[in-house]
Image 1: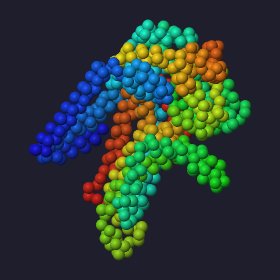
Image 2: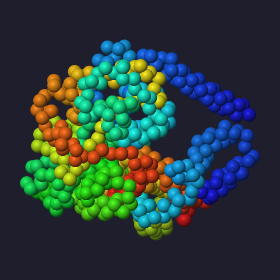
Image 3: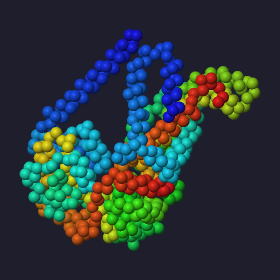
Length: 280
Length: 358
């Protein structure tokens, strides 16, 4: 938490020279960023009867919540990894196509469709009598349980996040000067070495941006944990929803939210854009 | 500097407009209330033709909103942002709303159709003399299953059948802490309203052994999935089971003999109401013999409206699975309001059970 505040402090100090035009934005940030975070912090210190307590924080360090935190991180990591594995080559191939803007558009359009709608579609696709299992049966195997497994959860999450990962990577690949690649090859670097020592380091900022927009929301996914994973996967997001809506324990819900904010801030720090560029 | 001025002015104007709009909405809620009635009900819990009929008969414009859990409904009523005139909480929520003074007492002289309700469903412990609530539908928690997809000896006369080894990954559970923990409590012969950590621990441990059989814990999606034979067995409410059975004739429903939950969903007038007279009209309208029969026929839950029974399909009323006899009902237990502390504990145990599914 303090690190975030420090970051914010640094930012406002840097821009001291051009401070006055920022006043409306500062109000905005105060109202919609600082105030909600302060409220969450405040609520996290309250018990069910509205008395101040640290019990919520103590509860977070019990095995249930630690295990949940670990599994949230594990699944967010898997989702980010697979998203990156699919998105990077796709973005790379996109920059090689003739009508790249058109192809990019085609990849982005599905992300305009409502998330819930797409999720429901997957319930049908993965179901015991859905098209995937129909295909499996054509090859003579018994239908498999695909829906309500951690596989289906990761698959659907990866599908949802891919466009958000492709865009920043595509942008940084597209900006890269192609003559650098030619130069590297001319000087005797193999294709793999060229990628590892030239292309990838030059696009690392795009990758970092992509990881941010994938990993952070993936940490708190909750709707598809129920619809696609049938609660076989529980994330911190699920717990927050339950604390607020079912248990009406705003204190505990806020405490989990505080930890999520901390984890997100850490993620931002780790994936901070390197202004100098080049190898990390 | 000009940009700054423009931006500031723009924000001030937007804020001003929002303020005016908010004021407008507020006043609309209070002055125009004579002709509007906001009904806050469970999803799929009314025949919408009846709303149209009510609008035609009374000239009152109905705004219809839905919720999917008592707790979500309660939160919205507490915050008081919307002027709900009718809400339909379950019995334990009626109890807690009464305690928190969130309900307006009913004027029984404005609800002559109250006489249509069967005496068994009136004057229940959660609301003596029906001072604040009128029963709307009732039902049980039980097991819906497809006999063609499971072994013959499983009839779910006992909860233990759920633990049968042949049901590996074949069982859906409804995503509700009281229902699932309650099932654990039923299997070890305890009350559904127990407030004892040791007993809850025991029930949760018993539930954990069910994990290999659990396919998923989900909400209303159970209905379409069971209709499509996606799973063989589901723990759910009687009314939801009736919906499924209407679409898939292979399905059957059973309430295990060790006991289960008996619930009542009730019409109440929350404190947020701006049209108390209209709300009474609505309650009386829903209690009308024909309307209640039509509604029960559409929704599929059991109606407490005795007059309606006379004109409904006799086969439905005679079906002990959905209209259990007075004796059978004695074995079932009604949820009491646990209070936030214990409700929280039930949810913690439920969360622990979910965490150990995989």
